[in-house]
Image (cartoon, rainbow, N blue to C red):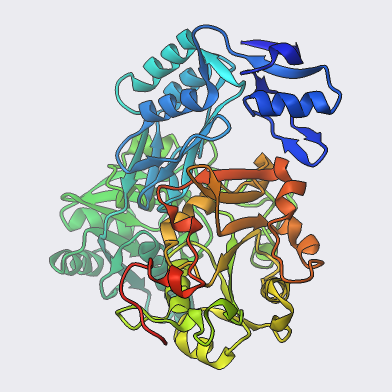
Length: 551
């Protein structure tokens, strides 16, 4: 790849290295320069531009990212489409992410042009969560470099594995010491914290067994839970376990089991005891398991639910990163944690994106009908179909803006989990409806979809594709759907544009802001034309799938 200043006369087909803001137009970084772009640059008085020119054998960034992603795919993993040299790998189910760290390091060591970033090993992931991202740093990769990276990625199978959580039944024994009443509330806390952990991992709790804090009664309780179908056995002791021959571990042995490991290099969690009764994992919980805060028990339980066998060697390997509790030299004493927000880290979760559905218009082009209330053959009004599609996406909350025939529109949306924002001045045009919806958004929303109430064919997965592409830090602060290159709706906006939108007046939306901020916009190509089709006339309604009737 040749990088540097390029005379305009030699720039056709080259890749623009930096965004250029010209009069009335922005050429984005990564644009392949054609005759029209070169003419605009020449008209701006520029004689040369900084470009990247591909040489023989070079693989363009998107193609390179796509090929490497294909090599890395595994069960329960999906990939996004390539854009700006990036492909994200996404979990298709909730589970535990297990990595071959050495091979991932080897991929990153192939060449500086190829990068692969992942979540930490043994991370708990949710469906559709991003677990890794491939980024090609320059605009192209030499073919031989990509071939090596591809070979390393494919060697001995994928370096990624997502182990789905299994719906295991968990039996818990609470031990009791007669005469000690102040332990009761603490032990109830153990039940609540354990149930919360188990349910978060797709499991369920059997009725809790209570037994005297003695080897025999606890062993009998374990036997009853095993016969009831327990697939994991837990003991929460009224007294902390201090030795592998203590009451809890001894009860596991008496119930026909064995102890595999006592203690762990994780704090809190040092006093966990891991055993087994036949094929059933059995654990004596450390005292910290009564708290909902992360501790060593979580790490073991997650692996058990993911179907991974946990050995003593596995536990002894948990020391790096195992210091989980806050200590005096840190700014966050443990007792303050519940009321102190976490430190700002790169978010693992999906960004919080809301949706604003504009449903306030007077439907003048379809008078006397209100297009939003025209129902399909199932009796569902158009506005309700639109809202149902939005609710099927990850956008939350969903704000519906009403205006014309407010009561009828709200009645059509009855029992749906949406927020209603009424635009008193809806007759002033689209901008009034937009501002009413934006004013109703929560302060912590990072972005928002602006959806039109007359586009019932835009399905939830389409909206999720827009949300997946949204990343203001990467320059994707505005996300626009396209079909065969034609721009459509709905659009997704970062909240950084909120103030500017609130100044819009008249019967216009925010689309004109795209030209002003073109360097912050990304287009997402869709598989069909739903993002181009609104139904605001009687003729248009004839093309709506399914016979319709007046609502």
